[in-house]
Length: 302
Image 1 (cartoon, rainbow, N blue to C red):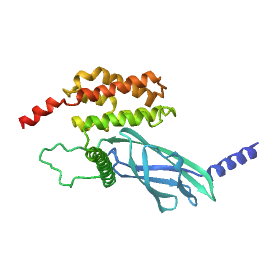
Image 2: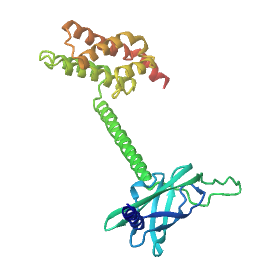
Image 3: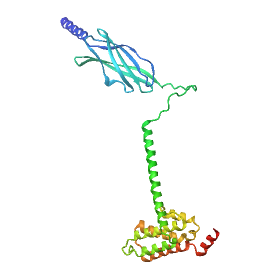
Image 4: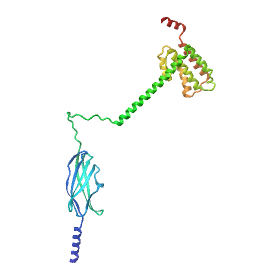
């Protein structure tokens, strides 16, 4: 019985004597550190000789960015592990680190240490005597895009003005080529349109476009009102400001509405509707044409 007891004591003593150990003996770390300010932590370790010390990176805290780590042995079974980190979380944080004791790629022991660290906000200077000495920052990429956008807008606007000017010039040249009275030109064009065959071919849209163009050209020749680029609503607004057209606003409105139905709503007008619109246009021309006595008065006043 005594022999068995002595054997058990020997086995226990031998096992404990060969157990692998690793422990943190001392830690040097700041109690407080400013936000995003790099700092160092030093861990003095004691461990079983002939083993290697490594850092378990999977257990490192997410609130800190590890920039550097290194182990410096001080002799058999001791050494210092230094870690450089940057905090990215305010207030109280815990820096948790786990050290591994390995040999031949196998882990024999490990130890975990929690270090409380307070992360303080970055100090902001409110001294009124301080002034900015750096040059104003202008993002080059955004500036280039802004300049390109402004140049594009300027080109589009210039092209629009050029096209509009050409259109007006064509209208003015066309008005200057025919030396007949304005009403005679417009009435002759109405007759030519009625004899063009467009109505018989059921080209109603083209017919009403031509009829509207006769009105617009006449307004420019007779009253010097440029409606070449106006919608029907814009043309009516100009007519309200013209003393010669104000008495004719109701029939003019009916004429434009009838034309819009054909041009944009694809309506197929009856012949009676066509005759009514042609008659409205003739009356507008006739009532806005100066009478011979009015022309004589104007010439006498000159």
